[in-house]
Length: 427
Image (cartoon, rainbow, N blue to C red; front, side):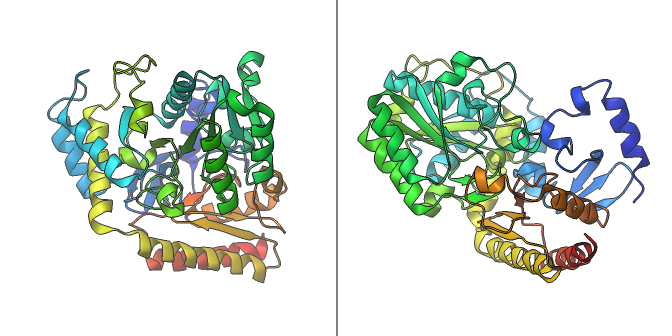
């Protein structure tokens, strides 16, 4: 493929933007080479600035569950933008998006809209501390909760890809309030509560991890978390920024029937625009200013464009319920990719939940960061470039999940499997 225009634009960007990108997950750090500069999206496709067309399994890292440029979302945005882009005042649309979230997510009784997943997790942690009067937070290795200082410790996502699990600028004092446990280890959960008992304000986790690849929380692990946090008066926070409306309409908590105290959301609820939210029990949420004393604010929170896109997206999902069909497509894709690797004699594992999946280049199943870190990232890089050069756009890291949208067809999945078979033979 010719990508001369893409290379030219990226070269210029490096003198303007640190590393040439506005988020490190876009930098191709896990696969080498230079990122592709995109011009537009159409359904399941991305088209780059050189006119090359790709079947897109990144979907903006999750939000585009209806595909790019969905007509219902575009129509909602067109109507909203004619009325103005930001008022700094309440709107009725904020209520409608809140109602859709509360109706869908089992544990959420009240919700506060913010501008990103990072804002949501940051605010939920502050709320948990304010509500309990405690300082300590528990998180899990390989779980990524945005670039919040207290949570950017043993993180996944680009931190794992670029081998920078602890960022400069995070103070020792901040890190000291965060306890790190291995994921999917119920005994470690019991042990930390035996040691710290009534000092832990919150436990935060991705119930299905998307940032060390797709790793599913086991029933024993999730049930132990719920039991121990209840017994010790600790706030259980499910980070469903990625899993919310992705692994099921009501998120991982509805799929697993385990209800947290607080939930953070993002991505899908903005329909492709910047948005986040945190919500949960009314008893806890009423501690947020101005109902309570825990401060959190944002000029653009709940802005008219993000709420319009979010409402349009959730309404389509609610009315059409595409999940059963899409999950079957995802399983078929996973089965095909795994078979392609096995037929080529390449050790690989598939991990999938709902509309999230990762092909791990590993001899053993991946259940936590320790097992994920032993994947063959060199093998992944060759696989990634082989697909990209044949028009398949996968996440540019072994440690990211990839996604389907309602715009992906059976023919696209068949084409992807066929191309994967070709790539694996020579990888």
